[in-house]
Amino acid sequence: MNESELLSSLEAVKDPAFGRTLKELQMLVGATESEGRWTLKIQLPTYAYLSKDELTSAIQSTIAEKYPEVGEINFEYSVKVLGKNAGGSIGLKVKNVIAVGSGKGGVGKSTVAATLAYGLKSFGATVGLMDADVYGPSIPHLVGAKGEPEVVEKENPDGQKVQRLQPIMADGMPMMSIGFMIPEDQAVIWRGPMLHKLLTQFMQQTDWGDLDYLIIDMPPGTGDVAITLSQMVSLAGAVVVCTPQKVALLDAVKAIGMYQQVKIPVLGIVENMSGEMFGQGGAAGKAKELSLPCLGEIPSDPVIREYGDEGQISKLFSEENSARESLEKMCAEITRQIVLNSLDAPKMPSLEIL
Image (tube, rainbow, N blue to C red; front, side):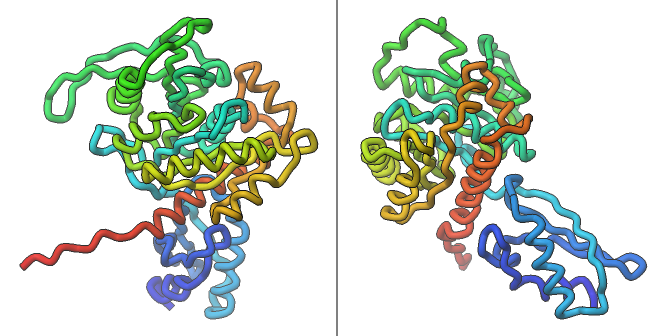
């Protein structure tokens, strides 16, 4: 048996997280043999991968069945995040831009956006967090970040000098918000053109660096921010946040319709504040009705509120707590949907040169 034979024998193995073959997912990177022992190199499409033990077991079982003489296999796992590489046309170096929205305010959308960002970072991804909720910027408070973005002059590869906003760093994560630029008690009274200008500055004129994911906390409702974003970049998708009650689900459906209308793929629905007080399972039922994934049920857990009030949302992933498991599962499911969408996206036909 050689490397090619070993890898070919594993191409049809289905990944337990994605339900697709290792060949489809391009996860088989290579294999090496030394002193009779094989090392298999596997490349995961997301850092938020929770099924490594199951995948290892499935591969070992297949090898044992086809090549019983091989014995124990060493595994080397690496990660290459799949994505649309959105934003190249406006200078962004981001593999996936994710919008987190809701049909109405008060459902914990900003908390979900912040926990998604820090959750993906805790898995090992490079992540940025952008607060596009201009009229109610919550991100600075949730993450305990303060300061005013500086403007720095930089030189493009072509030698042209440009002005770039430097994002505020919080726990090693770059972020931008109107909340860093105005007093905490000052209201923002802007019309659409001003919103468009600010979003352009945040997206196009901010020095985000190279990111696997840029999480955007959207304004609630069905305003024009989504239209602006859809015209600027090719989003990996939108996450719609709601609570279990019927009145919240009605507004969530409107948000889903808005994203679909502006050609932003909807990754699914997150049920926030799930539990005894507000009920449970409403989002899962509505998602099934709409043929969309339910991305997770976040419990109505006091620890989430406490860390948010203290400006320490990142501790939900750096410390053991009762909400951590459900939040990590949400992060994994969101990136899972991004990977599946990447695989299912229509391929552009190749041009035949005559």
